[in-house]
Length: 330
Image (cartoon, rainbow, N blue to C red):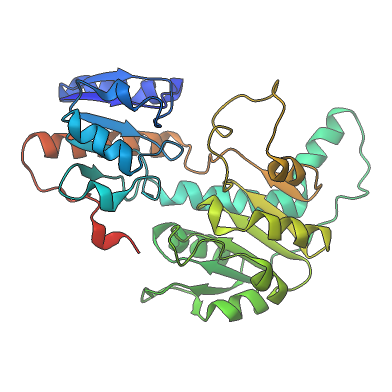
C-alpha cells in the first residue's frame, strides 16, 4: 500500500518509518498540511494519513475519489476534521480510537496543577534568583469538587487521578459508565458546584461552545477550567469576557478553536494575527500549550501501530474495527 503522510513532523518519522517498513508499506512523508491546496499530492496513492489540524471537506473527498484513493487514515481519535457523510460509499475512514488515555489525563492534571500552583512562574523567577513568593499563592485540591465532562477512557482516567487527590468528583456524559468512583449529575450541576472543570468530550454539534457566556455565568467565581479535548468546546470570546470579569482562578488550554496553522508550528518570529489567541496569552492565569496532551513515547508508538494495523486490515480484507461511519456523526 502507498500512503501519503500529511503534516509530517520529525517525531512522526521516528515511529512510522521503521514500522511502515515492517508492514511493507510505501509511506511518502509530506511536511505540508492536508488542505484544499495540497490534496493534489495524494494522486497515485492508495491512502492518505492525516492528523488533527489537517482537514478533508466534501470537495476534497470528491477529489480523492477521482484519484482512486481508497482510505483516509486518521492518526487521532477525533474525526470532526473530515466530512464523514460526504465520504460514505466513496472512501473508507479509519481512526485510532484509543492510544493512551492516561497520557492525556495526566497532562490535564499537569495543566491544572500548573495554573493553580504557578510552578511555571516560580521556575522563571528562581532562575533569576528571585525567591519571592508574592503572587504565587494557589489553593489545595484536597476535598474540593471537580467536574469531569465526558467519561470515555480519558475522562475515566482523569477521574481516577482526581480521586487520588481526594477530591469529590462529579461527572456528566450522555452515555454513563457503571462502576466509576464519581457522581453523575446534570451539566448544570457541574457548572454550579465545581471548583474545577475538566473537558474530555468529543466535539459535536451538541458540544460546540459548551463553555459559553451562559454556562460561564453559572460557574463559581475562581473556577479552574482545563481543556485537553477540542478547542471549539469553548467559545473563546466568552472565555475572554469571563477572564476580564475575574471569573476564573486559572485556565489551562491544550487546544484552541482556531489552532489550525498555528499549533505544531514555530511562529515565534511571526506576527500573530489571531486577536483572540494573542489576548489569551496576555492573561497571567492562562496557560496555553500546543495540543501536546497525547505526546508521550507510549502514545506515539500506539498511534503508529493502530494506524498501520488499520491500513493492513484494509489491504488484506480484514474486519475494519476502527472504521468511522455516518452513524457516529451527531
